[in-house]
Structures are given as C-alpha cells and as structure tokens.
Length: 115
Length: 114
Image (cartoon, rainbow over the protein chains, first blue to last red):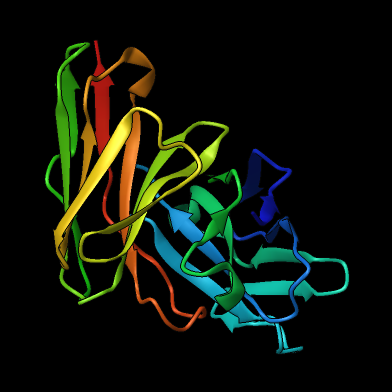
C-alpha cells in the first residue's frame, strides 16, 4: 500500500496570513495524482486542489496552491490570506491507476485560524 | 450538485447490537467506499466495492461486512457492535476509471456504542 504522511497534526495561522501544510508520500510509480481535501467541523469533506504528477506546474485554486516536488515526494499546501472559514481538518491523498480504485490518505492536519 | 447521502448522522447503539449504516450516491459511480475516521489515525478503509455485489477488504475489515445490491447503495454492517467501534464512519464514491477524478464523501455517521 502507498504511504501518505502528514507530520503536522495541528497548525495555526493568524487571519490574513499564509500557512503551509506538509505532506510526503512514498511510491515507486511515475504517474499518479495527489489531492488535498478539507473537512470543516461537522461538515462534508470536499476537494481543495488536485495535482497530476506528470505536470511540472504547481496547481493553483484561488488562495490555495501547492508546492509539488516530485523527486522529493513532497506535496505541500499553501493557503494565502487565511480566512476564518479555512479552519478545518486537511487531508492529503494519493491515487494512481496502478493502485486500482483506492485513495490513500494521510492522518490529517487540523488548522486553526486565529482572528 | 453531486451527492453522497448517509442515512444516519448520529447513532447510539448497545454492545452486541447489529448496526446498519446506509449510503446512497446519485452520480452513477462504480466505486463506493466505507472509511472509519479516528483522531490521529486519519481515514482508514474498511471495505470498498467496485461494482454491484462486488467487494474488497480494506485495511480494517474485521468486525464489519458490507452489502451492495444496487449500484447506488452501499451498506456497512456491524454484526455485533463493540465499544471499540465507536467512531465516525464516512461513505464515499468515485468513478472507476481516471485516477485523477476525485472522491466524493458523505457527511459522516457518528456511531457511539455503549
């Protein structure tokens, strides 16, 4: 099974500041996809951003961007201009065609936004 | 909007009871999943199904079974609930092909076994 590691169980950021959440993964494959999901308190988990491994360009979605370092097997999420609504649990995930239908998730990072 | 609906948000059951958690998706997805979410452990896969009547064990299948009689519905069954099965259970679905396609989650079912 693939391993996805999130080494920061908890993070905090001041409102309007920038925060980076870390994720590393272990794989021998060359083609795969990486995802960040957000789970607000008592609410549904939703997709934040997705990165294709074959693309060198880092994915960006409004205030959310990633730093994808394929050789280092690192996939960090940067949240700019943090807002109170960004407070949530964030999960990093891996999926590839070679692993069949499964998604592999990290253990999550709980982000607190301080007003 | 795409939707994965879990029938019960909060349940309290007694030890030894049989528990059914139901999940329905409206996206015609081939794959459906049941995860268990515990603090510090992230999401752990219990079972997944890639087609009607098909199922595969995930990382922690012990004490659980599943049923998928229709494409849109995937049920998780705790044959004899135990206190260590107190947790949040997440149902999810995805397409089978295209690894870049995302997975969609339900809102979760909080199960307490007393």
